[in-house]
Length: 284
Image (cartoon, rainbow, N blue to C red; front, top):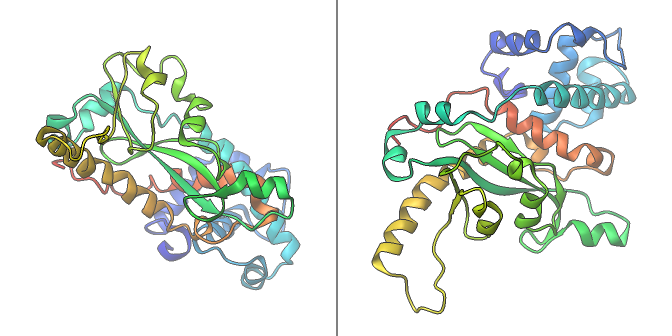
């Protein structure tokens, strides 16, 4: 169960299935040969192990076209169902579950942000190649911004854009700038490349990033200490992104046929990674 779905055991898998509600029996595409819980299992096999449709068709004894329709239907269904969850926690919840050392050094942190990129098949259209080309990865990708709480729970996943999109552009178009997302005095922890301090300044929200040299040959001692502290806490989001990418569909090249579902696939895989024990110790 863990290998094929990411859930710890059958009980956890069935708990998740029942949480989806009775609408699992009312999806637009109905397959009478495979019952809904096995359709979910098939879809999770596709996400977790990036199985080919042909291989799944052998496992479940249906045609490859049936597998494809089941996967597309369930990705759309899971996306809208999971979107109903409010997993952006309140400031009180953040404080209640903040690790002790984190609270000591960065008590106002509301979210830790980082971008992640997913490889895709090279588009045939020249313009699409340009839009999806990532100078960082040196290949065609789609890119999303991910946020976690100080305790390591995924609390935000943006829409996906072509790999050429800047971190700033993604944040400018995100819900993070919506009224009510942050309280005055909150802070965001991010990588050095996420230069968005001015976007949040009007709301009295600070962006904590490592220091720049700014023409100096080396950093001051206090800046070095600050950067090391930020790095020791920011590493948690890199670990969470690594865990989410155990859903191998995020590591192999996303096919042309699934590219339109790219944002939804990324969202589902990261939200599903919340169904595990926290990887951040309560004293971290």
